[in-house]
Image (cartoon, rainbow, N blue to C red):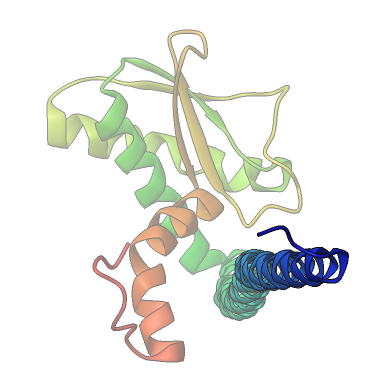
Amino acid sequence: MALSDADVQKQIKHMMAFIEQEANEKAEEIDAKAEEEFNIEKGRLVQQQRLKIMEYYEKKEKQVELQKKIQSSNMLNQARLKALKVREDHVRNVLDEARRRLGEVIHDTSRYREVLQLLIIQGLYQLTEPHITLRVRQADVPLVESLLESVQQQYKHMTKKDVTLKIDPDNFLPSESCGGVDLLASKGRIKVSNTLETRLELIAQQLVPEIRCALFGRNENRKFND
């Protein structure tokens, strides 16, 4: 039975409505899927950037902490160095005072005469040479000349050996020195310094730890006392 034009139009409209509905549903499905994928990608990018920002500020925080530690360490070292300098200055002041008092010995002629004789004898024992040149302060030349014979006799008595002593007429110890004597042998190639300053330095090397302990107390962090 043939369809009328009205029926054909009706079926066409029905088919068009069905197709349109299918298209709308498909479009909604595509939109929903696109929205879901967009949200997933957006979340991934946001999380990725968040991690980068967190890593950046964590790195900055570590750099700040490291800088603070370095600055604190530098300040601590500077304070420690200042404290050490103050301590060393105190020790040096003690040694300077000892040197000043040592220089007063020369004003006591009798005592200084004994000291010079002992220093020369000690130097002779170290050298054990037959010909010795003595270098002294120019002001001490007369005093040392008066000692030469007794020193030579004492040395011979103790060692059974002769020794010839002479004073260097051209070279002298500095006039501002505390005194004492340098002994030279083998044309100056061998030398024993027995000046009072030299003796003080030798003693100071041994006594500095004790001086530090007396001034500042024992340092528990020191393993050695040198």
